[in-house]
Image 1: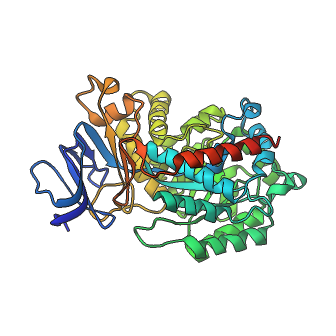
Image 2 (image 1 turned 180 degrees about the horizontal axis):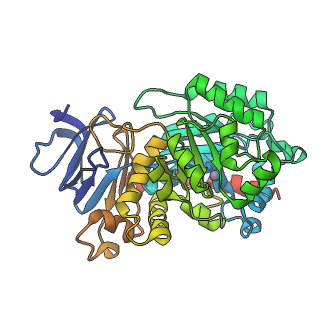
Image 3 (image 1 turned 90 degrees about the vertical axis):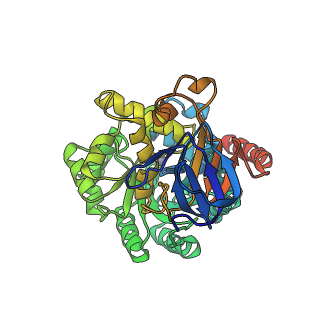
Length: 459
Ligand SMILES: [Zn+2]
């Protein structure tokens, strides 16, 4: 299929196509063809282009693979920038917001996912995960509600079945009303995998299992979730080593540091990717890398909550896949992977000097790195023949890019801010000319306002 005679979609005449493929090919004047939802050919000005049902002119634009979001809590956009929770660290922030989130229901899960996935697509995301760990009693099937929103939008979606089983009365942080018992969590996890998990290379929906964190679930739930994930062959996710408070909590509660605890409960596996990983010791970084445990780097969230600067270069050097995450919309508040990629680049330079992290490093983390975290290396996060037809056309024009003539990839992340001109998932436009293609956004924003107003009145 190197040069099929007919394609469904052809992106032509890009300023540069940055494929992020195995050879990291960059093609000035390049084009990309998508057929039946996958990349069917990639070429330059001298290569024969296929005929296409639809052609998009990418003159003046950078074309990249779609960005992959490896950590989020979509429902939190219902309590964005919530005034009573703006100055606390992570633990204070959580304790303030748990009572509001106890109002979650299927309507809230659907509308927050619809709005949140639209926001992500506008900034070039084509695949997102979600970590929904608040399942109030009687709230209904929240994960299926979000899967429905992703399908309505045409976004590739990896929701995780989150969980909390330790409430205040057991020494945990959350109130009783939002925790469940271990058997109930595991049975629902299995049900959701059977209902939604697609193992095909072009899957639009996959499920992973995701206890919230060591301070909100029991040790037996951590162990049993790892066993269930192995039995079902799905991935595992949780928060780990986000703050120094967590180190102290784990030492006081388990007599172990977070990474030692992770090993004890059977999670040192390449099935696992962890959110944050800000505070591992050098020896722990080596162990995480050797086990190929992935890390979702969330630079804005780590700064806004004062958590710290994650050791991204060290984790990558140790062999750990590193992806990018916007994190929950009420900790990071914004949800743009372009912004996270830029912030990751700036943090890398801040930690280790100006040469330590380039725009290409950040692009790689945002694409291939994320794909590796989600167990989808080769399927998403690169523009190579046979990979999913997920790509972004970024305009490098106008006042923001005037004078940026010599390196389109560095310009993309150093200049800006920039949003996607077109976001394509599986060969279908989700964002066209900078706007969502679906007609329902205004209506969903009105529902979002009603639901979030009621939730914020709950305090
Ligand atoms: Zn998080």
